[in-house]
Image (cartoon, rainbow, N blue to C red; front, side, top):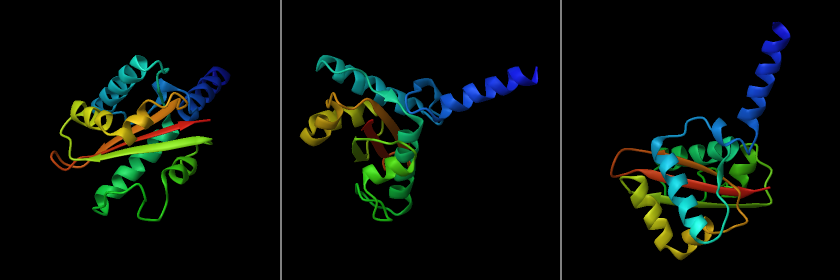
Length: 154
């Protein structure tokens, strides 16, 4: 019995730390799930494979969103001077390609995704077929919500 419990614990732990385990993403809000669905729909139309939720990339997105709200900033540079790639790596994801979209203000995921898709730079991140993993965070009150979507590939 103990061995079975230990094996189960190891399997669950590996799922929670594996950058490719879509179902293991903690703290995924309905808004984040909706962003994932909308960005994957746009990627499918462009011939790209779907993005998977990565726990590590999600941690990076949540930390940056909290940092931006806490320090009342709007930047891809963190209050500590970090860039998206540094934050994703420090969250435990060893990437060879990384990017980030941020958006302040949208009330819902539809508005955020549409805004990103209208912006050439943000659209390029979403439709970059080289990206495989993503993390999404939403922080702040309605009308002043900070949306962060990080992208990465190993």
